[in-house]
Amino acid sequence: MKVGIGTTNKAKVGAVLSVVTKHFHDILTFEHISVDSGVSAQPISTEETRQGAINRAKNTLAETNADMAFGLEGGVTMIDGIMYLCNWGALVLSNGQVLTAAGAQIPLPKEIAVQIEDGLELGPVMDEFVHQLDTRQNIGAIGIFTDGMIDRKEMFEHILQQLVGQYFFYQKYAKKQDNAR
Image 1 (cartoon, rainbow, N blue to C red):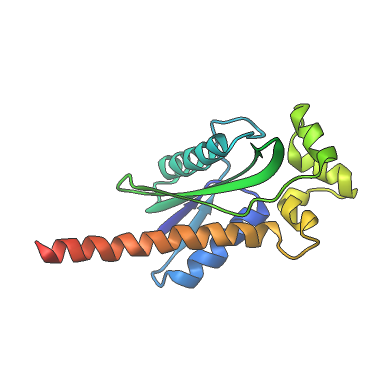
Image 2 (image 1 turned 120 degrees about the vertical axis):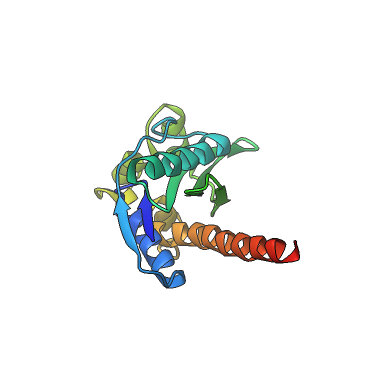
């Protein structure tokens, strides 16, 4: 089975490899590529972040001819005037089925939110905030704001578990429906 991953981000690729190799026992090959999300570089709503994940998965499937493709997208969203991290994943199958799932949400400190509202991307803002490079490839904002309790890879692993779980559910459900006919 060929699995496409619509990113070259180390944290996201690591999350897919961790979850998929644990739950699929077929011979797996992986291809991770950079694809366009079709949304803003910094998604600023739940809807835009979700759509970015779907677009990444669809674009990856088209470019890799994989059996299944994953797209993961991080963004922010406003809830009652407070900016939160949000993150979404999508799994697109070669038959066209699209599965989606969301992950952890945590409020951003006002000094970070203001910079995002001014048009900056969260990744570089976080790099400046902690005086490190490539935080989005490693611990991520979620890791910084949870004091290392959850890192970006773990956050996306949870989303991937939801996606893979849905995949197996629908595989079993479809078989039951076929047997009932």
